[in-house]
View 1 (cartoon, protein in one colour):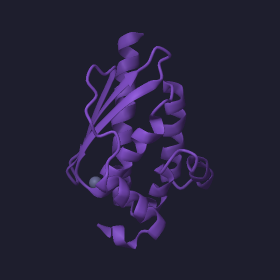
View 2 (cartoon, helix red, strand yellow; view 1 turned 60 degrees about the vertical axis):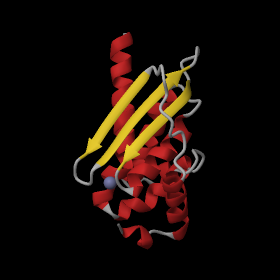
View 3 (cartoon, rainbow, N blue to C red; view 1 turned 180 degrees about the vertical axis):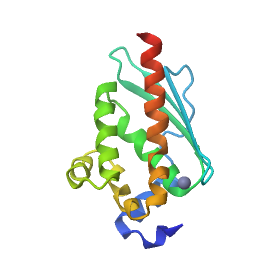
Length: 151
Ligand code: ZN
């Protein structure tokens, strides 16, 4: 894709996660499972979360297929949600979506959340924004199913 036209700093972080995806192993006995597919470019995300006794995410697994932006974003997301409670994840997802819509304050706040802010450059390629957000769709879908099952 147009990766070579992204800012170098953004590109390095994306390529690093693409080559060395974090938390790639499937989580056995997970509490939350989320899956999402984007037929446009063949992107897939399969996500598993395990919660500890305080309902914080203490195990994360994400397996993906498809383009570099999708895979890198998924890897970055697993790092950002590790250790967080579900309401903290909701806040993170909101920030991430706002950043992808062009919100500079959200981008600044996301700099404290690992590498996710390096996806800001993807905004310049609107067709790829869905790729950057696919893992978020899998995550929020999984959390919704979990909440409706336990409530
Ligand atoms: Zn894609």
